[in-house]
Image 1 (cartoon, rainbow, N blue to C red):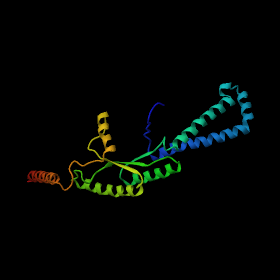
Image 2 (tube, rainbow, N blue to C red; image 1 turned 30 degrees about the horizontal axis):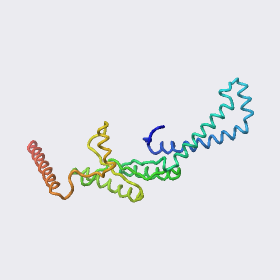
Image 3 (tube, helix red, strand yellow; image 1 turned 180 degrees about the vertical axis):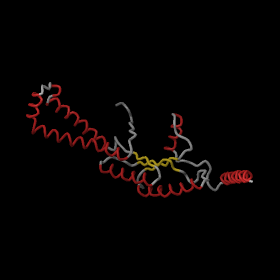
Image 4 (cartoon, helix red, strand yellow; image 1 turned 45 degrees about the vertical axis):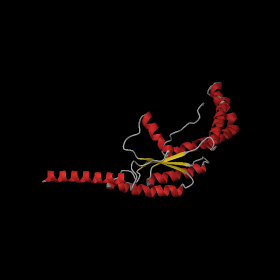
Length: 220
């Protein structure tokens, strides 16, 4: 087809691995069928004539279709294994199960001789973002543990971290804006240790104290 690049958004890991195995499995199956045809071709011809099957579904027609399908499958396998034509980009989040599934996927892709050298880690909460709640701070520490493991396991990969956003990314314009994170590393709104960051934290603390005092007055 006349496209410079085709992107397949694949299913979860288990389904994807079965999909990637399918061409090789089908090719082996076709080879087996073709070998059986050479052994039992005469019997197949007799059966098709017995049941009055016309030439469109006869032995030669079926064999011709199988041979054509085998050629297509062989071409797909060659494209899968050509790093100039096909690469696999792993998309994950900084959690244990996702790390485990990514490692499983990378190992299987290596067995299939499919190129993979990119990992995208999505929904990252950056430590220098506006993180005030205890829950978010705990999530930051948890994510950092798995981020370190990603960088240790895939030190020769190109790793891209994408931030967790407060809203969904829907619509063309939102996608265009979000796509900039693929080209430019995420920068926090306010850098740590600056005058602006300290002033923002003081303002947040004052608001928290004021809200707490209001709650206390209601209880009185």
